[in-house]
Image 1 (cartoon, rainbow, N blue to C red):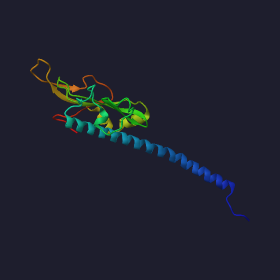
Image 2: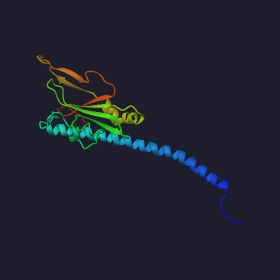
Image 3: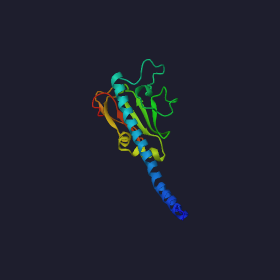
Length: 184
C-alpha cells in the first residue's frame, strides 16, 4: 500500500490556507495604512518644527535674495512635499499619503497691520486615507488650531484683540510662529 495524501486532504489544506489568507491580507493592508498615516503626522510635525526654527533664525519667511520675494517652503524643511515641480518656489506645500495630497501647509509672513507670521494647515484630500490622516490626534489638533493676537488699527490708539482666521474655513488651522506667547 502506498502512503500519501488523498485528494480530500489536499483540498482541506488549500481551503484552510485560503481562509487564513482572507483574514490576514486585509489586516496587513490596514497596518500599511496605519504606517502611512503615522508617517504623514510625523512629517507634519517635523515640517511645523522646521518652519518655526527657520522663522526664529531668520525673523521672516521672505528672503531678500529671491527675485519673486516669495518664501520657498522646501528650503525651510527637509520634509518632502507632493508636486515638487509646482512647489519649487512656493510658499505652499502638500503632504502626501500614498501619492495623494492630504494636508497643505502655507507660510504667511507677519504683516504691517500687526498680524504675526503663521502657518496655515489645511486638509485638501477627500478620500479615505486623507480622512484617516485628518483624524490622527496630532493632525486634528493642527487642523483646528487658532490663535489670538493684539493689533492696533491705523490711526487708533487702543489695541484690539483679533483672531485668525477672520473668516472661518473648515478643516483649516492657523499656527503662530515666532514672537512672544507662542506655545509649541
